[in-house]
Image (cartoon, rainbow, N blue to C red; front, side, top):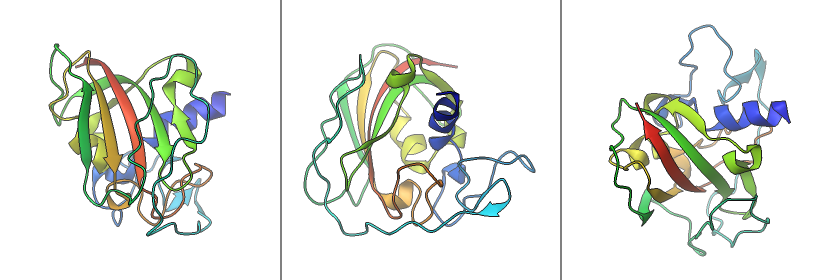
Length: 184
């Protein structure tokens, strides 16, 4: 369970928050498990690509307390989808904010939940400058107390090199529902 919690935290971290071609660790020489190029210095095994596959409905039961994930079934998103499900009323996240969130992530091509803070029973905190580009772009302007749907094209997520063992295929678009708890 502890390994799952560690993976869940780092799956949204790394990837430098930029294009899928520049995914080096922001922690200098410290190994980052979500760095798509290596895991503890070893090459990451290639994962079959799902490029061009449509998004399917949620295939897993929701963890206790998790919100519905309104996946747009059909063609995968080709641009970032940002949709407020519940507008917040508190402070707004900026590109330099550290956020505390509850979230659930679903793979577009399978409908499988690959990560969820709800299953761990506690929110996660991280700087928006250290997450995948779909999150860093998609959460800016979100207000505390809000719930937001993100549909993230593969190139704004992990592209062709997702984290090994993540349950995310190569070229996999991702769907998230994020609840913003606080910003700092």
